[in-house]
Length: 167
Image 1 (cartoon, rainbow, N blue to C red):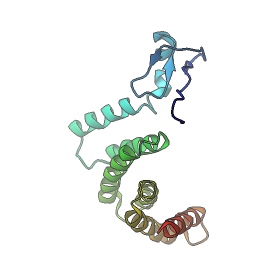
Image 2 (image 1 turned 45 degrees about the vertical axis):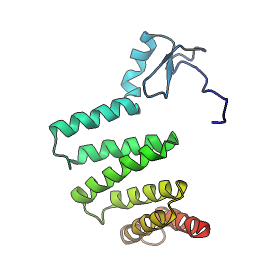
Image 3 (image 1 turned 135 degrees about the horizontal axis):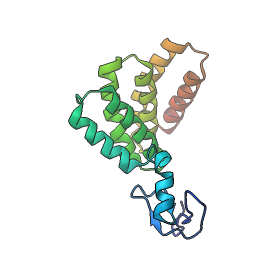
Image 4 (image 1 turned 90 degrees about the vertical axis):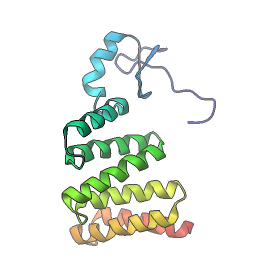
């Protein structure tokens, strides 16, 4: 968003303008507590504050390398990425990648996809060597799983080319 422009304060439930309440995740406004309660069932699935608390709760009751924690960390990484909060996306995806590597194996599809996601974040952060390393890692696994004609392989090849162009 451009400097000086604020996100419109439109209620995420009813669409009312100048909604005064903002969820702690800062992603949505509400005109009143009733609208906020009505939306909670759906919003909690994309609320970074709620998901961060869920990760902490799960860490207390599950093994630290439990797949459920990795799934939530992956979701958080994606949400932070779409909010342009790359440092947080980076942290959550790195931890999810570590856990998925332990649980599903280093050559699993989820490890390949997370490697490409992290590679894209690193590219945006200017960490081109790290980006290239992770994109190539993901590409090798995606090729093995899907073959050379798959769209994920093509997208990752395109991302590798973009990083090489920047280098």
